[in-house]
View 1 (spheres, rainbow, N blue to C red):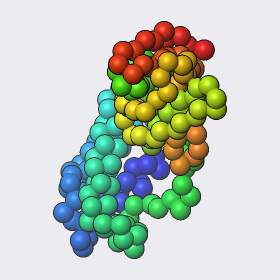
View 2: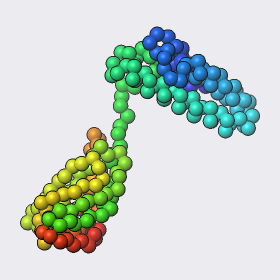
View 3: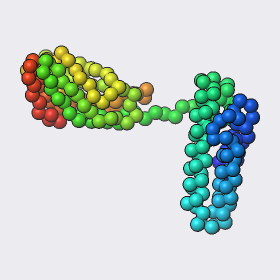
View 4: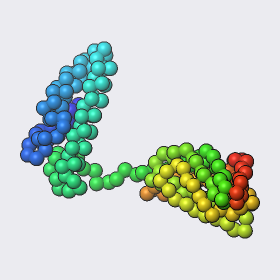
Length: 196
């Protein structure tokens, strides 16, 4: 199994020099690799009762290697040369990041004093949210934030407004949510939360 061979080489690299302090210790991972290899050999001989155990041990080894990777990254502190010396394979091509999922407006709560509270569902793969509020006479305000709850002040009072949200990350902008209609007043407020 190619995974076991690569994992053994990695543990040998980590056992030397500045990486021998990684957790879990390479000797612990090597012991699990021996167990995994035994289980894999049983499965290769069509002894399928070991498949579930083999999969559990493989997941455990993956988890331990992930933890070791985190330790190496902490030791390297951003130095790629140190990371390269660790034995971990470096992928020079970044995996493409997906666009954020489609936004979902949960609610708009108009508040007194020309304000409103906007709540939306968390958007997968987003770095931040963009909230767009539109109204009559070309009113358009964009607000960016990192939390799925925003309080906005200085909104036009007594007119129909619409709000929608989307996620944004380094890959671009996600799809806008449906719009919610609302209206704010100077001292009191009203809303219909109608999705358009």
